[in-house]
Image 1 (tube, each protein chain N blue to C red):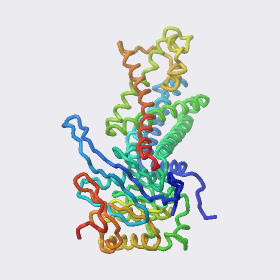
Image 2 (image 1 turned 180 degrees about the horizontal axis):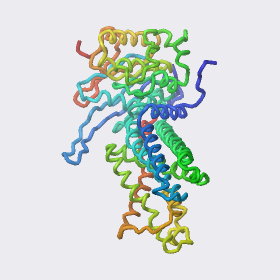
Image 3 (image 1 turned 180 degrees about the vertical axis):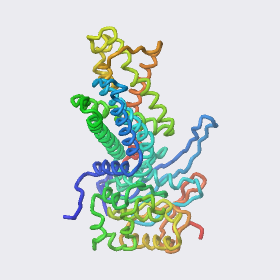
Image 4 (image 1 turned 90 degrees about the horizontal axis):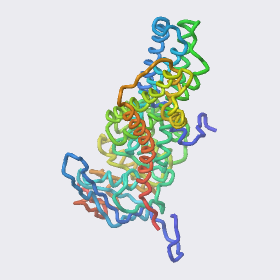
Length: 276
Length: 241
């Protein structure tokens, strides 16, 4: 037995390689630093700005962490995947060696997604520590943290997929802007109409028309579950409903189109027909 | 040599490479320019029966790298069939590929990258006395193991990738412009290595290049020459000296 021998499949080793690649880079560390700074600021200012309200602290810190992860996933998806899709880099080494291209893509995607989830876990844990240090009488709610982490993980995976789809068809900057626009209109705001229900009837968690579609919206707008607990009146701009729904639908289409893009890439290999 | 049964049930040798009615057409899809199409290369059939050294030559932009990438499954030809050792898709570690511009993960140390890629301890592989790597000690990558890939030159990265390709004991090597950017001593070393791989270990070698060192010219069995959109086959080395 050798001193150090990895007995695991190449797909898992590619996940590890993706982790190490990113940890030796700058993006993840910048995101971590920004998240930590923001959480420290919120913790320090919690008394003056947020009036020590636990629910507001939960929501505000969740949004900051979520936004940090979202922007990091946006950057990674639009910059990194296009190279693998155009058969450069690792694909050039592995595909001629018989490694399936689709498995390469999935392994890289899994590596990026799990790394970002780990970053989110670090930030959420830091959140508790920061508030404990700032003011022990107002501790961030521990019970809601797993839900927030799951919601963030869903969103960043979705963001990775959508930005990767755009990234393989256009330039990275355009891909980032397109994904950002879709998510700003389709996701950050799509819970807004539900808040009107809160203002009308504080007893109800969601508005009547959205309750029916709740189980479908849950995946595409992880913010929804957090927003529904937000107290207050929120008026969306007139005429924005159509734009919100179009953006929501477009991001859903982009997600499934990515699956189609993977299939098209696999068609490159399937074009080589067997010699009979 | 692997054999398969033909339509009459007789055993016949499986070709290393078989490509039929291969064609690649490139289109200009820029919406601001007039659409145009041109045939990069076209050939009725390509067949390699035995491990030999084949050179792909042509002028700049003729499609040498594109041909290699299509043969390896990195790009799709416009039409045609390609089979390696009788299969449509490449099997595990049958071929090693050295691209023209090696791209190693820049921030990762070479030793870490090789360990994850090969799934084995690199130090142990370097100390092995049997196998392909033990024969070519000059190809050793020991001095690079603790160096990040972005600090290596093109020739050094090439050496790392070639080492990792040979570590998997392939049946053949496909190289894209391996001599470009190398110093004269490195060119001679690489040429001698390739000759030894072909003559002593029976590896099939397919290479696209603008230049061929003298040591390799004698070993070159055929040249696939891309000229005016057609792929022609010439015996021996058809590159000018």
